[in-house]
Length: 455
Image 1 (cartoon, helix red, strand yellow):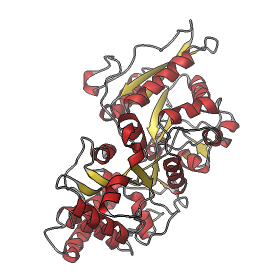
Image 2 (cartoon, one colour; image 1 turned 60 degrees about the vertical axis):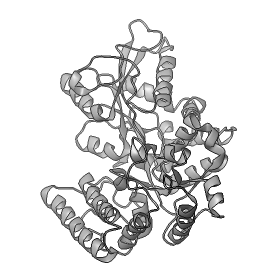
Image 3 (cartoon, one colour; image 1 turned 180 degrees about the vertical axis):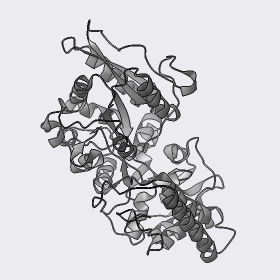
Image 4 (cartoon, one colour; image 1 turned 135 degrees about the horizontal axis):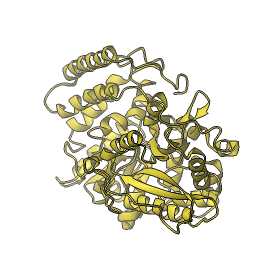
């Protein structure tokens, strides 16, 4: 996953109800006379990200002998799905579109995107890492081309604040984390907190890796038939949140505008001494707070037992899919080929612009990155790569199932100072199981298309 921002890049009127923030009326760059216009629908991300894509589009359009001109339209997160739906219904030239890995299966199920196997050369797929392949492959067909991987959860910490508090080692277990928080709490002022945690909807998706690490699975087993919330580890994980909030280690309110997505800002500003945050936070540090880089460390999340190298995060990110309604599928595939298959150096440019806050999914691109010097702390990159390489794909079962678990954690967090854990957890667990049963009874959640792949 990554944060989405509301930045106006260009003005284009599509339909007011869509809330489209950015778009364009035609191809960017030098126009090739008589060329086919291939339209890409893109998510409106951070400014640097949007500017990077815009530059690539202009570069592509300077090729004047391929019969293709590329047009990109940017949409806010809230408007994106509506924009796709309207384009499909009206036949207004949707060819390529960005899709998150967690939402790709729904597109496949509903026939909204086409397999790429016969549209791209096999070399394009052979160059993908196993992690990249697994995110876009169903029944041996590639339904999108992956572009990057983002680890959902890492531990960021302020070296200076830990040193001031007398914390001499980065915590690797929860008990060590609690001990560090006690020391930090004693040394910080009332406006500062020892630890930042996922809040809001992020309490659902950003904790999937923690769930797997602590319990050995997710709330549903791989068949999606059996609920596992009674299994060993779930109570311990709930108690983790209870302990952190009950002892005042973590703030009960959001310290930043977008909560977990930009929580790294609170760390850079000194409001937090440690925080869980996604790998994309590195780009925020380097773009907005470069003077803080030397004071910040990055590590794998502490775990219940301190074991390292296991699953502690999910791999989120984005892929390019070709819409089933496109009249220009071969030309859309040519755009994908140019962007991600033809030049490792060109594709690696994105990761440089992202300050290596994301992990490449092309082996050739990763090799190129490894062979070049970087301005970003090499230890950060090593941690991000290691966590991403062991991370699990985001689960594909109904989001309402995750909401039920999110409410379990949220309940023990909110009322941590008002009641004892045992009774609070028992009530929250009953509600969680009831909510899951309700979801599973009212909708056919089907079968896991990744059966056997998660673990």
